[in-house]
Length: 230
Image (tube, one colour):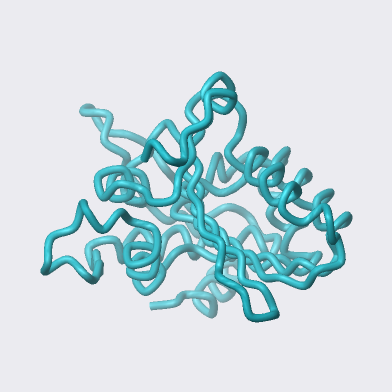
């Protein structure tokens, strides 16, 4: 990991590198838990023949991971703001309202960038600024989705350090994630369809997260049923 470390970023609460450790990936992308840090894996694919650019970023209590991600991308693209490329992000928490606005400002400067965002979980999903931010991103053409099992497997093969894997761990299919993937997918659809929140997150006496659906009316039920990926 030392090859990706930068002291300036350390002072801003940012860690970055080429490959993420197996432990960090498993702990922070598990949708059934609520970690206090944000990890962001990203990949740039160019329209012409060129090697894909892949990195990871972690933000813990400092600057948001999305902010450094945008700075990093801008440094790579500023010499040619009209270059065509596709950027895919896999984020452990969805962007907050502030970060959504930063992403929109960036895309306005870089009109030929296609952005796809996958999230493991939704950040303070009942806050109106966060819901509006995600809706705004989708409305300008950014694809936002909850990570599904094939996405976890792709990240495992693409971003996780090979030295941390055993020979029989070439694939990663955490099927026990399915209930939380479904719950977050339904809640994301409620945000993008501009209907009331349906996901409740609380904790038990051991501070373990407890997830449940709360559907208030028939219109919401029909919308969520049609959006159910399972």
